[in-house]
Image (cartoon, rainbow, N blue to C red):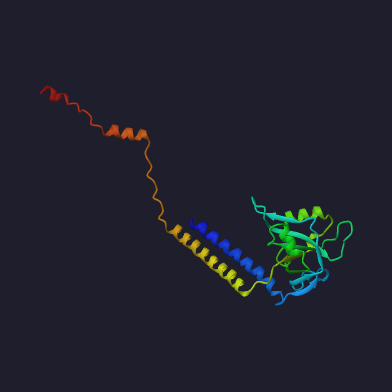
Length: 231
């Protein structure tokens, strides 16, 4: 039981440490004030610039939205929606997708429209710490064949740089959980080694030997000598 508790604490500590490190990487590259930029300029610049942005002059393509839900719930937990610069590919045919808006706050299509169809979009470019999963990539490639989604910008709407308090909480919890897990595992190791060795069990003799011993111990009748009978 202690081994299992220690392992769970170590895993949780690793998770909090990883989340804190990812947020730290993104916040370290961000400006204090979000940078206003058009989607076209953002695409031309790529994912290596300032991730803290307010995106302008863009259009979302809501004819294909990929989203995920929890089992048994109709509410979205995450959604990916293609976006293009305003005025681009307004005619027939599939446009060249080079940016995806990622949302973890919109629970349905109506909420997504309200959050992503405004003139401006407060967001962060998260390519440094995130990438498309296999399932959502497959669905997007089916809707937009020929698109290289490895090079698409991932624009996480509504996200802001993490503050020092959140980072301190993540790293603090990670340290406590890892130390706690290591302590529990050490205690389990000490207890395991301090248990007395079990005594070897006595071997039982075969039943035949026991019967022989019983026969040997059985009193026998003694015959008197012939001389004593004569007397």
